[in-house]
Amino acid sequence: MKLHPQILQKEGKNEFVVLPFEEFEAITEILENYEDLRELREAKEQSAGQKAVPLHEVIAELGLRPKFLANEMQ
Image (cartoon, rainbow, N blue to C red; front, side):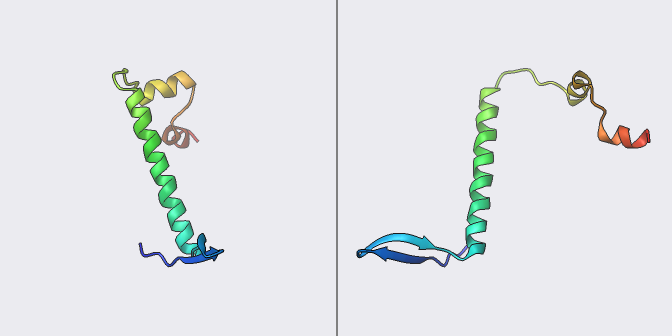
């Protein structure tokens, strides 16, 4: 991604950066994705060694019906 920043100075020192809105949105999305990935890796690290629970057991424990089954029963 190529950025097109405009640097604003105050008293001769760089003070602010202005970016086109599309570039700001792209950077924001990248940072959010990075944060999600970091949290996922942290959660995986914390759960290392724990027994996995199959999805069908979780669904049953929560008393839920899978969406594909709920649609078939209508």
